[in-house]
Length: 323
Image (spheres, rainbow, N blue to C red):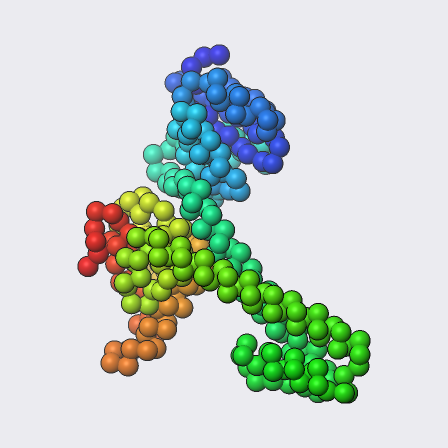
């Protein structure tokens, strides 16, 4: 085999497709590997740059390849799509990865450590628990309303509603049993969620970067910890503007013929991170009585987000303690 300088790898659960080129950009390696054969193959291969799409399991493979002496890079799937020249199949995807990683304007995704992925899993499980609690609360309210029992808004009124259902003789025995099942699951979900909140606070207290980010008004332990986990290495961004574009806070651009037309924000970034930061900024803005906006609170809030994300980028950068 001639010297391979670059390999594009398309990953899946069990089959991995490789596409490698030499110094003259000629394909010299086109191979399909089973999952068990990937590590032995790269262990025998000389150090080489390997490009993968940033998808499920990609960070694991990037860490594995790095441990074997290779130089793995991760790319967002939408950036690789532009180099897909023909039909969608594994070989074409691997070739597109190989081509995309060679382009000078391609932006790469930072490889997450196992600690960062564990923290990201903590937020994912917490979000699932929050959604499940909401589902159970709505189910209890909806079923209780069918028997003429309603409660005020808020999670604090769910338990009193269950007590009223249990004490109501007009609710059939079968319905009482089903309400008991929903109530038990609701309480168990609340208990698990409280335990996750404690783990999150403990994670926040151990993370120096998160504590620095929490000094920003409108950013609490959840937002600071999530920001540190999602961003990783902030030096990957050239400026705070790039960071804002990655978050999806910059407006859509429909400019032409010298006329500037800006639309709503792109919402192209991480939805969970943007939601947490926007909610924090909204809460801070609503509580700041001395700085009420005079040109409409949505515009003022967006301006606050744009200025705060620059502060966050500076705070996240190790070389800068923030302003």
